Image (cartoon, rainbow, N blue to C red; front, side, top):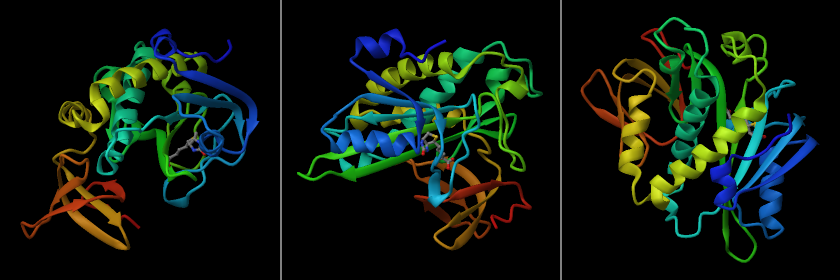
Length: 267
Ligand SMILES: O=C(O)CCCC[C@@H]1SC[C@@H]2NC(=O)N[C@@H]21
């Protein structure tokens, strides 16, 4: 089955470039922006050879997994609302996963849909293990125009060995990544419309919190060389993680890596 976009995305003017092999779909989408593209433009590859993750990590895209990026138009988005696009994308992805795999066997905590959760800032977990990661990158282009690219890496067919990772196939999904892209492009169009360039993050925040992993539990967050421990209270109106420390102080975290549980070392 070839990759294609969903009908709602196509109706809203989204376009798709499909490659056999690329280094990184995020890099290619940003290159398209530098060449004058404004988006929404989806870039997908069957084989990604130099996938990038957050915090400078590499991302292994095994055969059959989804490696896709979208160049998203951000004209009219105030710079302090840009990070919200990651939450738009996370919600779109979890909804797309539910639409694609709604019939997955129960993985232990109720329906498959319920065992899909969002991990701050924007990973997707399945049964508590990492199923997908998102990489949001923004750049000011020559001439002053800003561009944003969101990359989606989803373990559809296989998860890398040795990591606490999960694949859709291991959970019983027998389909391909193509169906997921169709749903994802449609859900991204719908969630972005609801977000309204940051004018309506409140609804999105509520929807995100309803699916948040570890809310109200002990976590450790590694951020800027520090480790913060406490209870994951909420995300604030800017999408920052709010943690209540044992001394009663509240901390907000803009970027970091979350580990769950009281024994979390965040090492
Ligand atoms: O969890 C993370 O660290 C984010 C991983 C993001 C990986 C995707 S795969 C498609 C896109 N292209 C990249 O080079 N990275 C993202």
